Image (cartoon, rainbow, N blue to C red):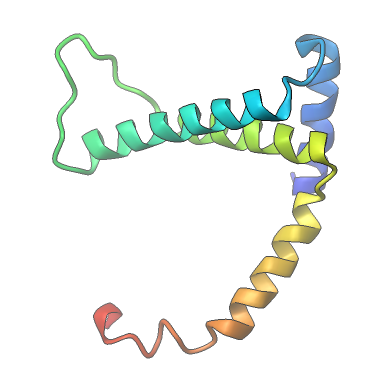
Length: 108
Protein backbone atom coordinates (compact mmCIF):
# COMPACT_ATOMS: atom_id res chain seq x y z
CA UNK A 1 0.00 0.00 0.00
CA UNK A 2 1.44 3.39 -0.94
CA UNK A 3 1.31 6.51 1.22
CA UNK A 4 -1.54 8.08 -0.78
CA UNK A 5 -3.69 5.03 -0.14
CA UNK A 6 -2.68 4.93 3.53
CA UNK A 7 -3.86 8.52 3.90
CA UNK A 8 -7.21 7.58 2.34
CA UNK A 9 -7.55 4.48 4.53
CA UNK A 10 -6.86 6.48 7.71
CA UNK A 11 -9.29 9.22 6.66
CA UNK A 12 -12.04 6.67 6.04
CA UNK A 13 -11.32 4.99 9.38
CA UNK A 14 -11.47 8.32 11.24
CA UNK A 15 -14.79 9.21 9.60
CA UNK A 16 -16.27 5.78 10.33
CA UNK A 17 -14.87 4.97 13.78
CA UNK A 18 -13.19 8.04 15.17
CA UNK A 19 -16.01 10.56 14.73
CA UNK A 20 -13.51 13.30 13.77
CA UNK A 21 -9.82 14.09 13.90
CA UNK A 22 -8.44 15.33 17.20
CA UNK A 23 -7.18 18.88 16.80
CA UNK A 24 -3.62 19.36 15.58
CA UNK A 25 -2.20 20.12 19.02
CA UNK A 26 -3.77 17.01 20.52
CA UNK A 27 -2.43 14.92 17.66
CA UNK A 28 1.02 16.43 18.15
CA UNK A 29 0.88 15.40 21.80
CA UNK A 30 -0.31 11.93 20.73
CA UNK A 31 2.58 11.67 18.27
CA UNK A 32 5.06 12.60 20.99
CA UNK A 33 3.54 9.99 23.30
CA UNK A 34 3.74 7.29 20.63
CA UNK A 35 7.36 8.15 19.77
CA UNK A 36 8.12 7.85 23.49
CA UNK A 37 6.66 4.34 23.47
CA UNK A 38 8.92 3.43 20.54
CA UNK A 39 11.89 4.81 22.50
CA UNK A 40 10.90 2.72 25.54
CA UNK A 41 10.83 -0.50 23.51
CA UNK A 42 14.14 0.22 21.77
CA UNK A 43 15.93 1.28 24.96
CA UNK A 44 14.85 -1.91 26.70
CA UNK A 45 15.15 -4.38 23.86
CA UNK A 46 18.29 -3.03 22.15
CA UNK A 47 19.77 -0.65 24.71
CA UNK A 48 21.04 -1.06 28.21
CA UNK A 49 17.75 -0.66 30.07
CA UNK A 50 15.75 -3.67 31.13
CA UNK A 51 12.03 -4.15 31.33
CA UNK A 52 10.62 -3.46 34.77
CA UNK A 53 9.05 -6.26 36.76
CA UNK A 54 5.45 -6.73 35.60
CA UNK A 55 6.10 -4.49 32.58
CA UNK A 56 4.61 -6.16 29.58
CA UNK A 57 6.67 -6.65 26.46
CA UNK A 58 5.71 -4.14 23.81
CA UNK A 59 5.69 -4.99 20.12
CA UNK A 60 7.98 -2.59 18.22
CA UNK A 61 5.99 -3.00 15.01
CA UNK A 62 2.78 -2.09 16.81
CA UNK A 63 4.37 0.99 18.38
CA UNK A 64 5.83 2.13 15.04
CA UNK A 65 2.41 1.65 13.46
CA UNK A 66 0.89 3.89 16.14
CA UNK A 67 3.43 6.59 15.19
CA UNK A 68 2.58 6.17 11.50
CA UNK A 69 -1.16 6.36 12.16
CA UNK A 70 -0.93 9.63 14.10
CA UNK A 71 1.55 11.05 11.59
CA UNK A 72 -0.92 10.31 8.80
CA UNK A 73 -3.71 11.93 10.81
CA UNK A 74 -1.65 15.11 11.12
CA UNK A 75 -0.85 15.05 7.40
CA UNK A 76 -4.50 14.56 6.50
CA UNK A 77 -5.82 17.34 8.67
CA UNK A 78 -3.17 19.81 7.50
CA UNK A 79 -3.46 18.98 3.80
CA UNK A 80 -0.02 17.41 3.39
CA UNK A 81 0.43 14.83 0.63
CA UNK A 82 2.94 12.57 2.37
CA UNK A 83 3.84 10.59 -0.73
CA UNK A 84 4.84 13.58 -2.84
CA UNK A 85 6.52 15.26 0.15
CA UNK A 86 8.52 12.11 0.88
CA UNK A 87 9.59 11.68 -2.74
CA UNK A 88 10.73 15.31 -2.83
CA UNK A 89 12.63 14.92 0.46
CA UNK A 90 14.34 11.74 -0.75
CA UNK A 91 15.43 13.50 -3.94
CA UNK A 92 16.83 16.41 -1.89
CA UNK A 93 18.71 14.05 0.44
CA UNK A 94 20.07 12.07 -2.51
CA UNK A 95 21.45 15.22 -4.12
CA UNK A 96 22.79 16.67 -0.89
CA UNK A 97 24.22 13.46 0.56
CA UNK A 98 25.35 11.74 -2.65
CA UNK A 99 28.77 10.85 -1.24
CA UNK A 100 28.54 12.21 2.32
CA UNK A 101 27.98 8.87 4.02
CA UNK A 102 30.32 6.93 1.73
CA UNK A 103 33.06 9.44 2.53
CA UNK A 104 32.45 9.32 6.29
CA UNK A 105 35.34 7.36 7.88
CA UNK A 106 33.17 6.68 10.93
CA UNK A 107 30.90 4.51 8.79
CA UNK A 108 33.65 2.46 7.13
